[in-house]
Length: 252
Image (tube, rainbow, N blue to C red; front, side, top):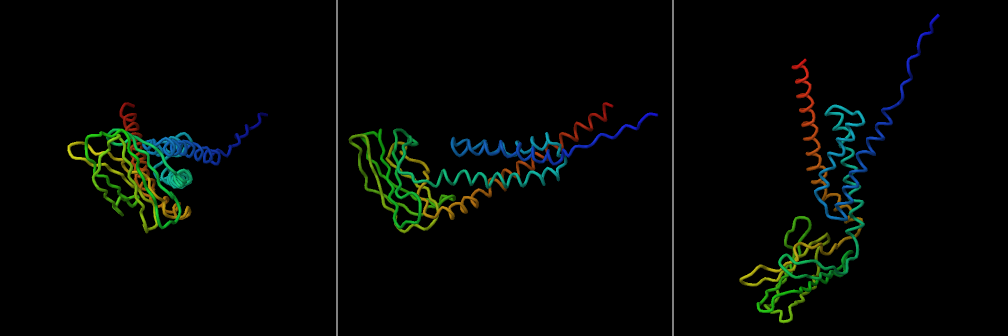
């Protein structure tokens, strides 16, 4: 008498797939964020929606609603992880650093103190590689971050750089709490200005308050643009899938 074959026991793949999905979506996202924070590769953040979609695809989660339900928490997690990575890097005591100016030459920039609640902030910019036969009109601007509103401004008397370098500095007092950018310029008639561009300036707030402000500042990027790109990708994938299915029915 033949025995009835037993139905193969089903493995709990759904739970395992959920774990694999989270790892497959978050690990590449965190790598993209690290590359942005440490190398400035901003465009890599826009690969986060693609990483989530690929992980969903290969772990068997289908349908726009389900993928939206699964992807949104990952985007929120990526947003909070990004802030957790960026805060320790940006909230540090920067003494000085050098960079090329927007025109020619180099500039050494210093901010003291860089972080914490302080009544005064000393900012200086030492320009080198300047032409010696022109008259400069130096200026320093302090901007509110992240909207770049002019918070404070100082203009210096016209001067020359007979030795090819020029040092300007100013003490800003009683600036409100928050994080700031500043820009140092050397304007002169008949040529391109020498400028530092927007430089991260004083962070005049505590680390906890700064962390909260970073969370708020990056809402438009993660819960705005990245989420929109992710949703658009879901609909594009759905459209491609429907088109392929209809072609199969037609040729069949």
